[in-house]
Length: 293
Image (cartoon, rainbow, N blue to C red; front, side):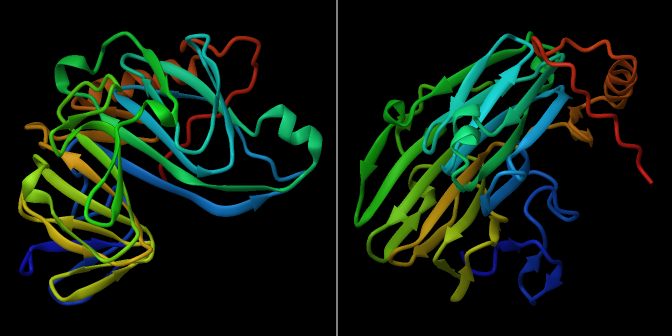
């Protein structure tokens, strides 16, 4: 890769040929392909009195992708969806012109009172300009429905999109990819052989070696060169590859709203304040619009 990467972690610092900051967005790299936001959940242990309760909140202009490594979540939305998210399964909610949802620790787990280990990622994928105002939709895939294969000492799972001559059944709205890789031995990855567009590498556990530098867990490495990224995934490591072709237009983001037009975001803010968004059935909770300082 020869000095062609950014490394992004949670605290900003400069290490010469690399820029280091939080996941996404980052002030010098706002998006990777259509991926505009990545939130790392945990790892943490939830106990009675600490259960996850994300009350009713809105989205526009994006698809949310929830992928758990440990734990469980109950997803409900204004489309009438009520589904449990388990490790390895994929929740894909396309907000389009507007949707609301909640995410909570499932009731059966609350009733046991047993601690729950939680670890996973919540990811936002911006919609292409012509689909930003599409009708909302929801899709869920169980782990067994995702393409899985082994290659040179690494287990691959194609979570979303197309990569390495394979395609996930998840119905995405622009060219993209998200691939999970678990290395059982040192594994050399040449992304130019099977990925298209901008490329991000999220190191979940273990490490990768790129440009003769070791990148540890908790970091995000972004290739500056499209379609080209060569790394070594060290034995026992767990990573995600994600990205795709970048959109030609800039994307604006405020809270949970994403759009290529600022006026659409302003209208969404006004509509949420006026409580005009569709509601999750039988849920009266409401997360107020945060005001920027």
